[in-house]
Length: 110
Image (tube, rainbow, N blue to C red; front, side):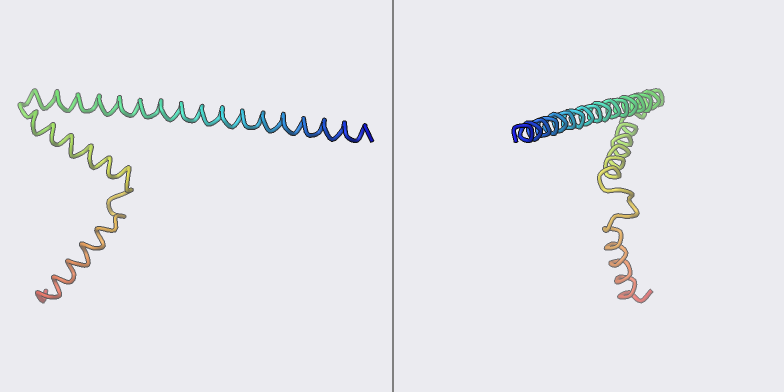
């Protein structure tokens, strides 16, 4: 009887230790993935910064810094929208615009 209780206690302890180990492995994996994602984001940000600097320098040589700056902002905004909402052709607003266009054409008689 005492051996049975000791075996149960030993199995519970092994289970507990295994669960703790699994949790620690999961936590380590999450931390590693988080660090990798941060590093990738930093690399992307540095590449975008480098491209913006190149665009600005080229524009400065040609006296178009304001135009290039605004163009760069528009491109960055489009890229951000693409990252948030997916490809532009998949946006539901295009279906709405198309429906309005079709109704206008029908009303005008085209």
